[in-house]
Length: 74
Image (tube, rainbow, N blue to C red; front, side, top):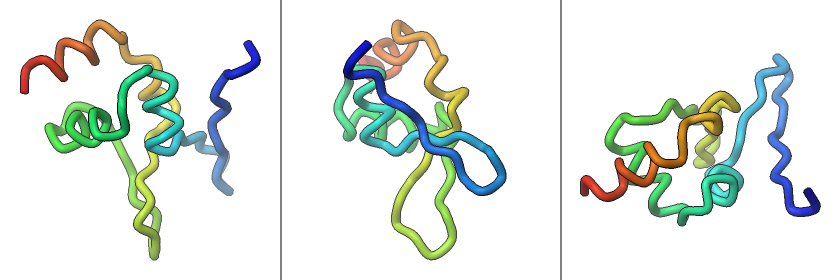
């Protein structure tokens, strides 16, 4: 797939998606990802000395139907 989002690895070989990458993968907006994160429904990580939010690769395997049902619950 030409537009496939490839996650990034950190120095410990843990693979993370950025908020934009996860939103692209789930085909939702970055605001939707933030709303889901704020509800505590997905794991995330703030790297030290950074405002960036990262999401572990396993997060991307959540069922897209579940993601859409969570966003409708707002």
